[in-house]
Image 1 (cartoon, rainbow, N blue to C red):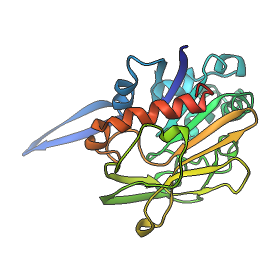
Image 2: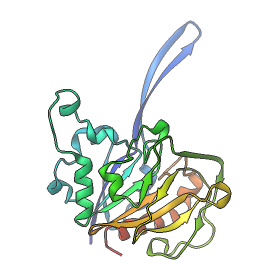
Image 3: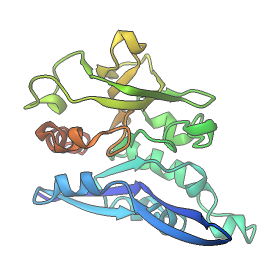
Image 4: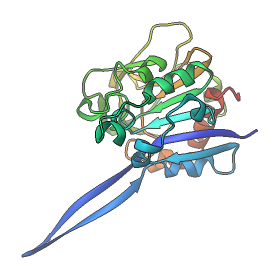
Length: 255
């Protein structure tokens, strides 16, 4: 069985100015942040469509029918504005379908929704990701804070596993260090389960939370899917691939 997954975001463009004595010049570089995850899922049952942040603005589906081609969606390091403000709205003042509502309705119909952490996930840096009080937040098992929610922990922390779950099957022993996460609040409603947290010394904040919305399943992973919050040692750890395969199997009803 092939599981179609839409991975949204995890790309950016950097502009730099280089000064060399009297002279200066500029350079622009393009970066992909989900390559470790894509590589970890190669050769498995997952058919990944990697939709970069700039492509998302116009190419993310505008209808429930289009979105129904996928069994799972991962929103990672991309703000709500990228879906709310396509050129038709931003440049031409035309009404279009609200794609945040489409994601919510797709989840309610049985889709598997995952939000992974990052500077433009949940509420994000300076609160600019702005997923708080959106239809997508309505479907997630957590709520976002109204301000910058980053937990920067440069010395690293280890996940505190709270209970057994199919998502954690086959992952034994101590997890490698993580360097940060987004702070969220777990929804107090039936079906929501906290599988892992930050240690109590770092506030005990949620790290991995599962839930349901309508006929669909939802997951919040509040750390990153690759560096920098997820160090190279975590990516190289066998549990990394197992964790994400388990997440996608569970959220898409394949497990």
